[in-house]
Image (cartoon, rainbow, N blue to C red):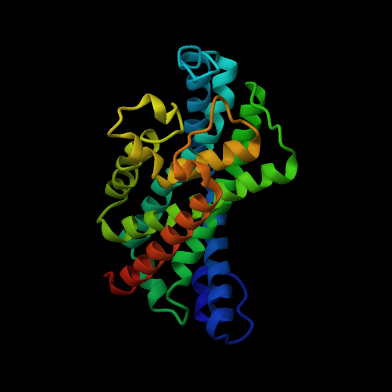
Length: 283
Protein backbone atom coordinates (compact mmCIF):
# COMPACT_ATOMS: atom_id res chain seq x y z
CA UNK A 1 0.00 0.00 0.00
CA UNK A 2 1.16 3.52 -0.77
CA UNK A 3 0.97 6.58 1.44
CA UNK A 4 -2.05 7.81 -0.50
CA UNK A 5 -3.93 4.60 0.18
CA UNK A 6 -3.13 4.72 3.89
CA UNK A 7 -4.18 8.38 4.15
CA UNK A 8 -7.42 8.46 2.20
CA UNK A 9 -8.30 4.89 1.35
CA UNK A 10 -8.64 3.04 -1.92
CA UNK A 11 -6.23 0.78 -3.73
CA UNK A 12 -3.27 2.29 -5.52
CA UNK A 13 -1.91 -0.70 -7.42
CA UNK A 14 1.06 0.95 -9.11
CA UNK A 15 2.72 4.26 -9.79
CA UNK A 16 0.85 6.44 -12.29
CA UNK A 17 1.78 9.62 -14.06
CA UNK A 18 0.05 12.48 -15.81
CA UNK A 19 -3.68 12.38 -16.43
CA UNK A 20 -3.98 8.79 -15.23
CA UNK A 21 -2.52 9.78 -11.86
CA UNK A 22 -4.82 12.80 -11.56
CA UNK A 23 -7.87 10.72 -12.49
CA UNK A 24 -7.01 8.02 -9.96
CA UNK A 25 -6.17 10.42 -7.12
CA UNK A 26 -9.29 12.50 -7.83
CA UNK A 27 -11.45 9.38 -7.68
CA UNK A 28 -9.93 8.40 -4.33
CA UNK A 29 -10.52 11.88 -2.85
CA UNK A 30 -14.06 12.01 -4.27
CA UNK A 31 -14.87 8.63 -2.71
CA UNK A 32 -13.48 9.86 0.62
CA UNK A 33 -15.84 12.84 0.54
CA UNK A 34 -18.82 10.73 -0.54
CA UNK A 35 -18.23 8.30 2.31
CA UNK A 36 -18.16 11.25 4.70
CA UNK A 37 -21.56 12.36 3.39
CA UNK A 38 -22.92 8.85 3.96
CA UNK A 39 -21.61 8.81 7.51
CA UNK A 40 -23.11 12.25 8.19
CA UNK A 41 -26.49 12.17 6.38
CA UNK A 42 -27.47 15.50 7.94
CA UNK A 43 -25.27 17.14 5.30
CA UNK A 44 -27.52 15.81 2.56
CA UNK A 45 -30.81 16.22 4.44
CA UNK A 46 -30.29 19.88 5.32
CA UNK A 47 -29.04 20.52 1.79
CA UNK A 48 -32.43 19.27 0.55
CA UNK A 49 -34.62 21.25 2.95
CA UNK A 50 -33.83 24.73 1.65
CA UNK A 51 -34.73 24.17 -2.04
CA UNK A 52 -37.85 22.20 -1.06
CA UNK A 53 -38.97 25.10 1.13
CA UNK A 54 -38.33 27.53 -1.74
CA UNK A 55 -40.54 25.43 -4.02
CA UNK A 56 -43.39 25.26 -1.52
CA UNK A 57 -43.23 28.91 -0.45
CA UNK A 58 -42.95 30.40 -3.94
CA UNK A 59 -45.57 28.05 -5.41
CA UNK A 60 -48.26 28.31 -2.74
CA UNK A 61 -47.56 31.60 -0.98
CA UNK A 62 -46.36 33.91 -3.75
CA UNK A 63 -47.36 32.11 -6.92
CA UNK A 64 -50.88 33.47 -7.08
CA UNK A 65 -49.69 37.06 -6.76
CA UNK A 66 -46.89 37.17 -9.34
CA UNK A 67 -48.02 38.27 -12.79
CA UNK A 68 -46.48 36.62 -15.85
CA UNK A 69 -46.89 38.74 -19.03
CA UNK A 70 -49.61 37.36 -21.32
CA UNK A 71 -50.24 34.49 -18.89
CA UNK A 72 -51.70 36.19 -15.83
CA UNK A 73 -51.26 35.41 -12.15
CA UNK A 74 -51.85 31.80 -11.16
CA UNK A 75 -50.01 29.44 -8.84
CA UNK A 76 -50.14 26.68 -11.49
CA UNK A 77 -48.73 28.93 -14.20
CA UNK A 78 -46.11 30.33 -11.86
CA UNK A 79 -44.96 26.84 -10.83
CA UNK A 80 -44.10 26.08 -14.47
CA UNK A 81 -42.20 29.38 -14.70
CA UNK A 82 -40.50 28.92 -11.33
CA UNK A 83 -38.95 25.48 -11.40
CA UNK A 84 -36.07 26.12 -13.80
CA UNK A 85 -35.05 29.02 -11.56
CA UNK A 86 -35.26 26.90 -8.40
CA UNK A 87 -33.19 24.15 -10.02
CA UNK A 88 -30.52 26.66 -11.07
CA UNK A 89 -30.52 28.30 -7.65
CA UNK A 90 -30.08 24.92 -5.99
CA UNK A 91 -27.01 23.95 -8.01
CA UNK A 92 -25.35 27.33 -7.44
CA UNK A 93 -26.08 27.38 -3.71
CA UNK A 94 -23.95 24.22 -3.46
CA UNK A 95 -21.07 26.72 -3.50
CA UNK A 96 -21.54 27.23 0.25
CA UNK A 97 -21.06 23.54 0.98
CA UNK A 98 -17.95 23.33 -1.19
CA UNK A 99 -16.35 26.40 0.37
CA UNK A 100 -17.14 25.33 3.93
CA UNK A 101 -15.89 21.78 3.36
CA UNK A 102 -12.57 22.90 1.92
CA UNK A 103 -12.14 25.54 4.64
CA UNK A 104 -12.76 22.86 7.27
CA UNK A 105 -10.12 20.60 5.72
CA UNK A 106 -7.71 23.54 5.73
CA UNK A 107 -8.27 24.38 9.40
CA UNK A 108 -7.89 20.73 10.45
CA UNK A 109 -4.61 20.36 8.59
CA UNK A 110 -5.95 17.70 6.23
CA UNK A 111 -4.97 19.68 3.15
CA UNK A 112 -1.40 19.97 4.44
CA UNK A 113 -1.38 16.21 4.87
CA UNK A 114 -2.56 15.71 1.31
CA UNK A 115 0.16 18.03 0.04
CA UNK A 116 2.78 15.89 1.75
CA UNK A 117 1.63 12.77 -0.13
CA UNK A 118 2.84 11.59 -3.56
CA UNK A 119 -0.35 12.66 -5.30
CA UNK A 120 -1.23 15.21 -7.97
CA UNK A 121 -1.87 18.70 -6.64
CA UNK A 122 -5.19 19.24 -8.40
CA UNK A 123 -6.66 15.89 -7.28
CA UNK A 124 -7.75 17.19 -3.87
CA UNK A 125 -9.87 19.93 -5.41
CA UNK A 126 -11.11 17.86 -8.36
CA UNK A 127 -12.15 15.06 -6.01
CA UNK A 128 -13.94 17.45 -3.70
CA UNK A 129 -15.85 19.16 -6.50
CA UNK A 130 -16.80 15.83 -8.08
CA UNK A 131 -18.23 14.63 -4.76
CA UNK A 132 -20.21 17.86 -4.53
CA UNK A 133 -21.46 17.26 -8.08
CA UNK A 134 -22.81 13.83 -7.08
CA UNK A 135 -24.59 15.35 -4.08
CA UNK A 136 -26.02 18.11 -6.30
CA UNK A 137 -27.34 15.54 -8.79
CA UNK A 138 -29.08 13.66 -5.97
CA UNK A 139 -30.57 16.92 -4.67
CA UNK A 140 -31.89 17.76 -8.15
CA UNK A 141 -33.52 14.33 -8.41
CA UNK A 142 -35.36 14.73 -5.11
CA UNK A 143 -36.30 18.32 -5.93
CA UNK A 144 -37.72 17.26 -9.31
CA UNK A 145 -39.95 14.72 -7.56
CA UNK A 146 -41.20 17.42 -5.18
CA UNK A 147 -41.83 19.72 -8.14
CA UNK A 148 -43.87 17.03 -9.90
CA UNK A 149 -45.93 16.64 -6.73
CA UNK A 150 -46.83 20.37 -6.70
CA UNK A 151 -47.82 20.48 -10.37
CA UNK A 152 -44.65 21.01 -12.41
CA UNK A 153 -44.58 19.12 -15.70
CA UNK A 154 -42.12 18.42 -18.52
CA UNK A 155 -43.55 18.90 -22.02
CA UNK A 156 -40.65 18.28 -24.41
CA UNK A 157 -39.73 14.66 -23.77
CA UNK A 158 -37.02 12.87 -21.83
CA UNK A 159 -33.97 13.64 -24.05
CA UNK A 160 -34.50 17.40 -23.83
CA UNK A 161 -35.23 17.09 -20.12
CA UNK A 162 -31.87 15.33 -19.64
CA UNK A 163 -30.23 18.11 -21.64
CA UNK A 164 -31.70 20.68 -19.25
CA UNK A 165 -30.39 18.86 -16.21
CA UNK A 166 -26.99 18.48 -17.89
CA UNK A 167 -26.83 22.28 -18.27
CA UNK A 168 -27.74 22.67 -14.60
CA UNK A 169 -25.03 20.25 -13.47
CA UNK A 170 -22.47 22.00 -15.67
CA UNK A 171 -23.38 25.33 -14.07
CA UNK A 172 -23.27 23.78 -10.60
CA UNK A 173 -19.86 22.18 -11.22
CA UNK A 174 -18.46 25.48 -12.52
CA UNK A 175 -19.74 27.30 -9.43
CA UNK A 176 -18.32 24.64 -7.10
CA UNK A 177 -14.87 25.81 -8.20
CA UNK A 178 -15.79 29.31 -7.06
CA UNK A 179 -16.61 27.68 -3.72
CA UNK A 180 -13.23 25.93 -3.75
CA UNK A 181 -11.43 29.24 -4.21
CA UNK A 182 -13.45 30.84 -1.40
CA UNK A 183 -12.72 27.91 0.92
CA UNK A 184 -8.99 28.24 0.26
CA UNK A 185 -9.07 32.02 0.80
CA UNK A 186 -10.78 32.34 4.20
CA UNK A 187 -9.72 31.27 7.68
CA UNK A 188 -12.74 29.36 8.99
CA UNK A 189 -15.67 27.23 7.78
CA UNK A 190 -18.10 29.81 9.20
CA UNK A 191 -16.55 32.59 7.16
CA UNK A 192 -16.54 30.31 4.10
CA UNK A 193 -20.27 29.64 4.44
CA UNK A 194 -21.07 33.35 4.66
CA UNK A 195 -18.70 34.28 1.84
CA UNK A 196 -20.12 31.48 -0.28
CA UNK A 197 -23.71 32.66 0.05
CA UNK A 198 -23.76 36.44 0.36
CA UNK A 199 -22.99 37.16 -3.32
CA UNK A 200 -25.32 34.43 -4.58
CA UNK A 201 -28.51 36.21 -3.50
CA UNK A 202 -28.11 39.20 -5.84
CA UNK A 203 -26.85 36.87 -8.58
CA UNK A 204 -29.94 34.66 -8.43
CA UNK A 205 -32.53 37.37 -7.76
CA UNK A 206 -31.25 39.80 -10.41
CA UNK A 207 -32.19 37.28 -13.06
CA UNK A 208 -35.21 35.68 -14.70
CA UNK A 209 -35.40 32.94 -12.05
CA UNK A 210 -38.33 34.26 -10.02
CA UNK A 211 -39.84 37.16 -11.98
CA UNK A 212 -39.75 38.21 -15.65
CA UNK A 213 -36.84 40.53 -16.38
CA UNK A 214 -39.25 42.94 -18.09
CA UNK A 215 -40.71 43.74 -14.65
CA UNK A 216 -37.37 45.13 -13.42
CA UNK A 217 -36.22 48.77 -13.71
CA UNK A 218 -34.83 49.58 -17.12
CA UNK A 219 -31.27 50.20 -15.87
CA UNK A 220 -31.21 46.77 -14.17
CA UNK A 221 -32.51 44.74 -17.10
CA UNK A 222 -29.20 44.52 -19.05
CA UNK A 223 -27.49 43.20 -15.90
CA UNK A 224 -30.15 40.51 -15.54
CA UNK A 225 -30.06 39.59 -19.24
CA UNK A 226 -26.28 39.14 -19.28
CA UNK A 227 -26.24 37.25 -16.01
CA UNK A 228 -25.04 33.71 -16.92
CA UNK A 229 -27.54 32.39 -14.40
CA UNK A 230 -30.38 33.85 -16.52
CA UNK A 231 -29.13 32.11 -19.66
CA UNK A 232 -29.15 28.71 -17.96
CA UNK A 233 -32.64 29.30 -16.55
CA UNK A 234 -33.96 30.33 -19.98
CA UNK A 235 -32.32 27.37 -21.68
CA UNK A 236 -33.83 24.97 -19.15
CA UNK A 237 -37.30 26.49 -19.55
CA UNK A 238 -37.01 25.91 -23.28
CA UNK A 239 -35.78 22.34 -22.85
CA UNK A 240 -38.41 21.46 -20.24
CA UNK A 241 -41.19 23.08 -22.27
CA UNK A 242 -41.94 25.49 -19.42
CA UNK A 243 -41.79 28.77 -21.33
CA UNK A 244 -44.63 30.86 -19.92
CA UNK A 245 -45.47 34.14 -21.62
CA UNK A 246 -43.40 35.73 -24.42
CA UNK A 247 -39.72 34.96 -24.82
CA UNK A 248 -37.46 37.94 -24.13
CA UNK A 249 -35.93 39.34 -27.31
CA UNK A 250 -32.62 40.22 -25.65
CA UNK A 251 -29.67 38.55 -27.41
CA UNK A 252 -28.61 36.37 -24.42
CA UNK A 253 -32.14 34.99 -24.10
CA UNK A 254 -32.42 34.30 -27.84
CA UNK A 255 -29.11 32.37 -27.68
CA UNK A 256 -29.57 30.92 -24.21
CA UNK A 257 -28.07 27.49 -24.97
CA UNK A 258 -24.80 28.85 -26.26
CA UNK A 259 -24.51 31.57 -23.62
CA UNK A 260 -25.21 29.03 -20.86
CA UNK A 261 -22.60 26.53 -22.05
CA UNK A 262 -19.90 29.07 -22.88
CA UNK A 263 -20.32 31.06 -19.64
CA UNK A 264 -20.26 27.89 -17.52
CA UNK A 265 -17.10 26.64 -19.27
CA UNK A 266 -15.40 30.03 -18.87
CA UNK A 267 -16.23 30.11 -15.14
CA UNK A 268 -14.99 26.53 -14.80
CA UNK A 269 -11.71 27.22 -16.62
CA UNK A 270 -10.97 30.45 -14.75
CA UNK A 271 -11.82 29.36 -11.23
CA UNK A 272 -10.32 25.88 -11.49
CA UNK A 273 -7.03 27.50 -12.51
CA UNK A 274 -7.25 30.07 -9.72
CA UNK A 275 -8.20 27.41 -7.16
CA UNK A 276 -5.33 25.05 -8.04
CA UNK A 277 -2.92 27.98 -7.98
CA UNK A 278 -4.25 29.09 -4.58
CA UNK A 279 -4.03 25.52 -3.28
CA UNK A 280 -0.36 25.29 -4.21
CA UNK A 281 0.37 28.56 -2.38
CA UNK A 282 -1.95 28.08 0.61
CA UNK A 283 -0.49 27.38 4.04
